[in-house]
Length: 294
Image (tube, rainbow, N blue to C red; front, top):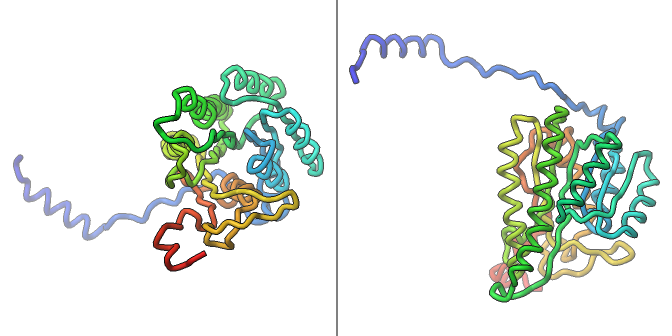
């Protein structure tokens, strides 16, 4: 390649006299002011679809989002739990409806989408909470059927629902939010090979989807809970390996994290993030046990 001395000198002088200009300021199409938060609530008039919302984490997400003004539409395997959550949601001035549905089954997903379309319900926020854990078992003893069942419920079903919701969201030009509930066991060993592997898959799917959907203004994030449990009175249980407070975590704290990630006021620039909420459980190891005995 021929070296052009004059061209290089000219470019160097131009750079010295006129350095790189300051980056252009982009005008945001949507700015959420503090007054919006105080007066209208964080999720006012947003339509949320939550899977597996009949109990525990899913129920808490539904209730916490309802408190922030969101209309709650949800699924659960149990029709009884759907009825009970609908009753609880009547305490809030919102729209709500639940359906007994198995997200691991394609027919159930199609029926759910058909109902949403018939009622002209536009989903702004999708929370993929549904999931199963078939229990501890040596890796070599987990059958092909058990692997398939776990991934159908935890990965393939939620991904299929997400794909179809996103297609509608893009058609309607909705800049929405998608949240996956994963687990700290996507990183930490738990002796649940099929369960942990499925959650690890979700962790990468979140990042891949965040990249693909960013140009559409759709945010994709996740929540990785630790030990979530409480008794009938709402009290957490003692948990020696959870460093902060030494207890399990009340599910409403996962619900509030979902509100944070779904809210444009807090998370307009947050995507591809997995929020770890485990009170330090994933930090525990043999070294920690030596210095902080139970």
